[in-house]
Image (cartoon, rainbow, N blue to C red; front, side, top):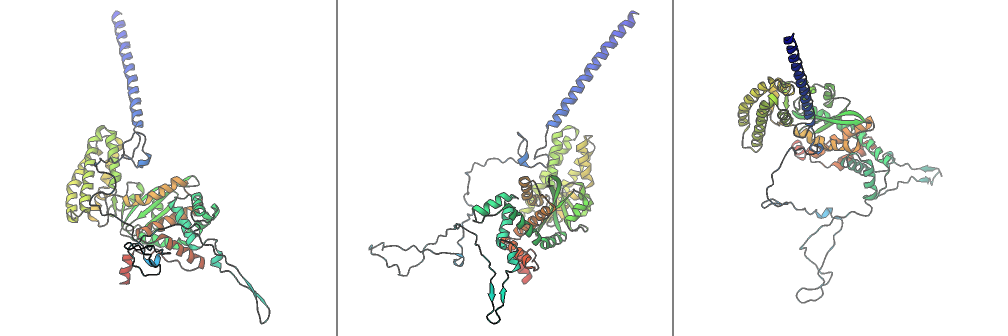
Length: 478
């Protein structure tokens, strides 16, 4: 009996110790979970923009001070303002010397002089908008006495603003990222033309109709380009989530607002047909419809994934560190290639050892047992061919930076205006962003083209497509 009581007491002690250990283990797990939740996404380990970094987060790029003074450096080729030709000067004011600098005698104002200095001053007139009134007159025939009324042309009565001013309203709106109130203020205070908010909306609506055909032509041209960069970002339609897709290449950029981020939406970006050419994308699942021989993965996105895997720690940290090291060597090799220190053949040869090292690191990470890191590695092993497509494809870069640069103005527009209020507003955003981005890429004046498109639309004429670059135009003429 005494032995049994002793054993029972010992068992109770062991059970108490076990219960306490289990309680401490639960507390440790809870603390670990809180720590993992506290490791918020940053610009270095996610797609979060640097402007949205949490307080205290390290910037994605830390630049070391050079010790040089700000401003132009010694040896820098300075830029100066070029004088306009005389045929573009509105007024010429002559400054003659009043007296001779030697004998002090007065100089005849009519005596000939030689231009020794020129300085041009640009100024905004008090009222920059010219108001024209169109009057229809009724005239009596001197032969039969019948009174006939004149009619104002339909393209004139289509709007109270001319084509150039209408184009300027749209240009202001795109530059101010969708703020109609700011556009109306600019029109009133800067150009001297009072403008209501409804008039700004009406001009945007008209421009949207004017750019419908050029936009469709850009979509067709983008679909046929050999290399293109695609990406997407969020958009809003009356507060509901939408997606803004972009396809950018060396010659044009097209945007499209879609309801969801799906494969049909991606196909609709390029006209709805089968995707052609080589694409640079991120790892989003909608792009898995592309054959790996026609797809390149963005290494800038992968770099953030590798940083996140290192920060997660655990069994996959070593493999992630190796992948990040390979990523940095890829960027260094590409930098040398762009500086023409390495040929295309040298680029291909330099990639081979990096490919082998990356494969070993991915295989190690896939077997590490850390769910997120292992999933990342398995995903990249399935798409391994797309990692190195840039080495063998002329015109394809290892990053999707071109598409992201094109998206940046749209992102600012969304943040300032909260997206669109109607489907027509979404169409306007697609068309104006596409046409203006393409005009900038091709070095063409934006205002002139938008004004010509509005004028043609009002007159019922066919609207010309977005003009090619000057060099391309010269090649076509030759």
